[in-house]
Image (cartoon, rainbow, N blue to C red; front, side, top):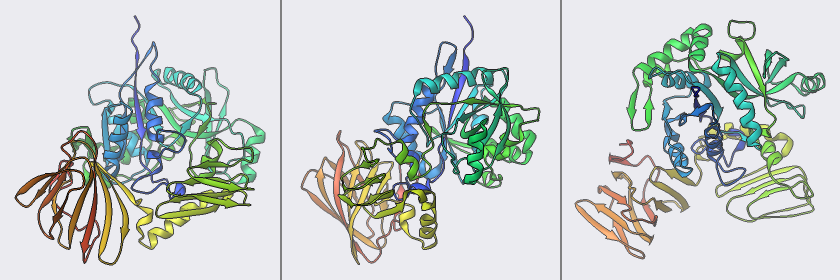
Length: 481
């Protein structure tokens, strides 16, 4: 019996997806959204990589590289699809993809192994799983022999939003990469399409962990050294692995492509490309989402409660209410409870400028939805005025909020469904449907769900200051105190 090639999936789960605002927010970015079905892009990526096992390939549980703010969201979404991560590597600050992959490679070789890393962003879609697996199996076989393999997409249009790879035929199942080229203007993109031999860079890489570490040390010794220093001083908390924050902040920021891949052609690290013709999209902007969604005879792609008359080639995504259109073409309309985007579909890339403006104005709409997910459940801020705020709160079975107090507000709680265990000062009571309680200003309290079904309450806050930073956590099951 031959030894199986060990494959370590690596899911790069950073990024804020600013061009998919208002559905994508910094606190709930696009990789966690369900844009093309019942599962999020992150969940699709995890299942896609876990399906790569074959007679000669053994696939380990994935390494997930993400930020501190998204750690519980990532683990919860993996739990929903029955996948346990090998570890969640938490970047204390964003440093782009090259340090992220270096962390994953260091984790992969920690116990003396040297698996083939299959590295994928968390925000892509692939329509044909069989073709994807075939391309990946070719890449894995060559990576096991020491090659660096990148996935490339044959272009079907003069796309200006992707980087390109120029590749030539080689005596292998993959092509030899001649050079990488930046995102082109439209005239250059048309030239690439006419000439042939140019492919979109899919941002997926297949290579042994030791090969990546050798390459990053060769091309970016500064990045390799600082990442190793941050890894050496890491701390571990259950599935979470945290590099040293101070050391990690000193790491230069750079992408996998710029730091290593673009330097490989002509070096001692020859790079190959596996063509992928599997219906790939990175869903980088709303026009890309429109292109992969089902459409009616007039080219309209509609999600949610939408009524359109005499419209064509529109994308409408309605979250909470009816959206009606009459006599428009080539529009993107995205509705959420707290924001509405209307854009020309050809200007989808420019949505990021709206997010930049929101950041400059210090508005919450670039960061959070009205409905905010927490490790214990979620809350939805359904109304507010000068000295009050009303929230709908759901707590998962067995979960609890932190033991906390507030300096500036009191709270009234009404149980809508389920059972609430309420700690208020030195008293603990159980409340059920239609019962209520009052939490005075400054009193230590906690809300918990001891039952087997979700607990839902309505919370009415009253006071002079009602923002989320008026929470003093005294004890917390999620390490936030």
